[in-house]
Image (cartoon, rainbow, N blue to C red; front, top):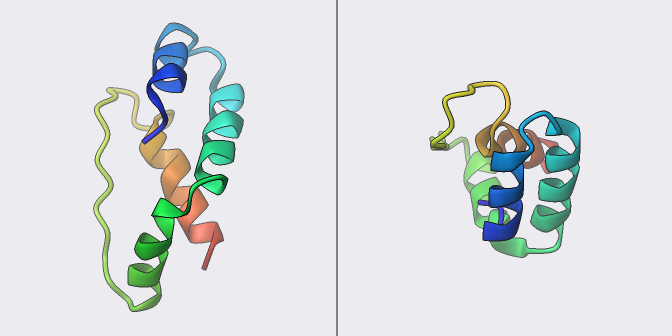
Length: 72
C-alpha cells in the first residue's frame, strides 16, 4: 500500500491519477516487500489484491497489479 502521506494526498487530489501512479511506483521500487508476491506469481499462484476505493480503474490495486506484472 502507498504510505499514509501519498494515500491522503491522492484522496484529496483524485484528479491527479498519473502523479499518484508515478509516486506509488517509485515507492514500490524503493522497497522490496513486493518480491515475495512476484515469486508466487512466477510459481503460477493466484493473488487477490484488495483495495478500498470505489473507483475500480484508479486505485492502488491497479498500480500494484501493473507493477507486479512488469516484474515477471
